[in-house]
Image (tube, rainbow over all chains, first blue to last red; front, side, top):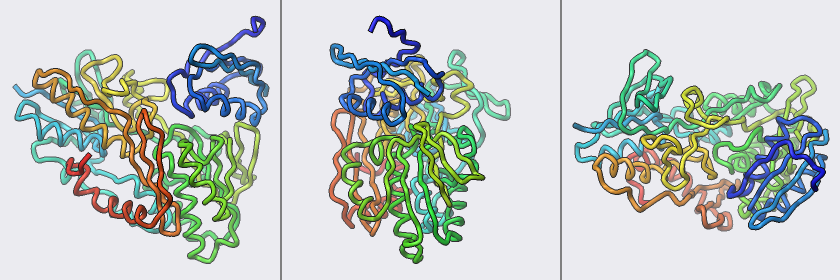
Length: 79
Length: 379
């Protein structure tokens, strides 16, 4: 974990579904290939939505880290 | 001396707030609405214009006919707000001074943010809906794609309603068996609301409407007639209908009152601007995590009006706040509809589609002009 350097953190805690996913999509749209994004989400739906979207869009889900009351989704823009 | 209350925007939120403040101010407030068109447009009707079920002339009225006589209407564009000086500059150079300001400026559609999307049709403006209807009248069969080019957009169920009404329209014209309809959703379901998506997805399948999920429109190639997604997929079309990207009004962006997309940051309960305590915003204009719809503006307006009235009268802030209430209809075709009700604390509930909800929506659309802007509809 400590080897991954996050380029941009999106704090989407408190946002209802699909806010966290749409925030990630917006960031990836504007980002550069190989950049790493971290989304903080307290929405339960993100646990399925974000990994599913990352797989479909063929980016890389680096890690999902459970925290107290939220989760961190770390995603690398792959293309 | 009466407090000056200036309201920017003569849509449902601005008009209702103006009427409520004027009605209950007891002469302690003078209300001015600024709207550059001077016409009130019922945007939920655009959907019906697109499929030939409504005439554009039925969807707009003079704003003065909907405002109380003691509310002034300025038919001019507002170009800048100065929160420090508490002024609004108009296009003519004239300046209005306010004690309390309401931003009911709605949203704008920006199709040109999507490369190539000039070739697409939409039903998010009156002109767009008229053009789409003309195209559908000439359509002889082929592939129709209905996609979403950005979230948030007005009326989240509208693309789903459109494909159902399009299915009806094509069946009535005898073109349905020559047409493939595909709904391209940016999410992994039909639209934002999960429970209602689960209800409508089997009906999409029954009607032979294909649902393609996680398709966030990125570009359109008008020559190849393809639409391409951020996820790397591509579909060919004969007729493309897109929900355009939305953002807040330029006035909000130019005045530094919004975020990077021009949405006004407000407290989601009080609707007061996060930075400027004499400014409120409601309806599509805000950044709150709720549907952009007339229903939201309708339920928010009394909250904003009560807060302004309390401030005008020097009374404590009202206890009642906006709890995220939304109630809207969703057409499912074949003369049926369902409803969607939810708030910040309660997920959406939708009954099984039935004719009664379709007629309920039709009745509401007609009754709107005599009820909602005047505050005559029970909350």
